[in-house]
Image (tube, rainbow, N blue to C red):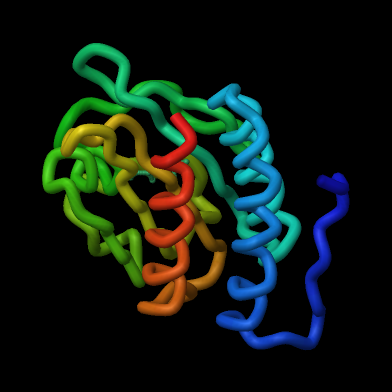
Length: 160
Ligand code: SME
């Protein structure tokens, strides 16, 4: 697999996802190391969409702990049910947040973050990590992001 990502700058959001998902799949399917794959997924999403922050929090004991990411430094530990990530973990479902200011208990790692989508990753029916994507624009994520990011996390699940 080549280590270049091909993205059309003029493509629509769904076309970009359609273009990069198979490339990410090819990138991670030949690599058994989870952290290497999480790092490359974060980098690919950042490169394709220019997200403000994109990365993973992994379930370790009774907390989520910061994993590979792209963007400004972030909080390292999140308790169950806390913030958007902790809510996605305990509710076992994607959280689409158009305005973080009105999400109860949102954890502001950065004041620049305005909207957010968090997708849980499952193993054996349990959440083992979450993908967190933040934007510095309000209402920057929709059902297209949700659909493709859930699909991407489904691909990831089959690699570990
Ligand atoms: N805002 C998240 C915390 C993680 S940072 O945004 C990177 C939350 O409320 O869970």
